[in-house]
Image (tube, rainbow, N blue to C red):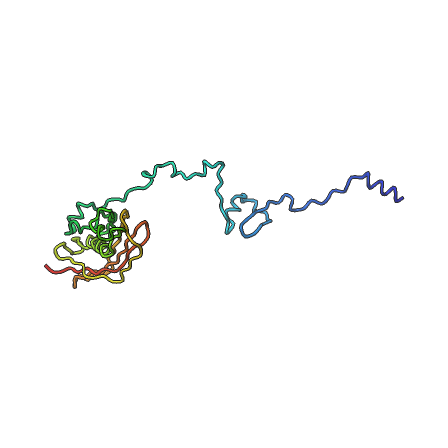
Length: 230
């Protein structure tokens, strides 16, 4: 009888194994865990993945050509837009009394009357201070950065709606000035001056200023302007 049972076990096909309930269940991966739960039937799988917290998104390219930076096909001289011109050098000369070699503002690129102004100074090797500061390493003097920023402040204040005029407006003082990085020939100095407090009774204006090169602060401080009586 034992042999018969053994032979029957050889002839009979093996009993089908119970299929796992996880065999056809989709697996959802996230950086923090693996979820074995089914998504809601009314919600597509990709939406379910999108709503997962802490999900990571990947961008895939079919070839190396697709992965290239699209800007690489544009010549470098065409990639960067010029600064806008809100007040040009001719108008600046009408506002400020300064002249060569002490006019240190080339263009105003943003202007809010009586509030703030943003202007640029193109620093070139032809600036008259570089032969002496320094012959072997041309660095813009810090005092001239402060003067350039004060001139931008003058553009804010020397307007009819503020009450200033080029005949009776003076640079009265500075405070908390810090020089963060050197400014060298070839840099573009971008200066923002903002009016903080104006006391018309005493003719005193307090301003805050920051100067940037390449988006980094190179100089900052507080400025005091005085408006004298005619």
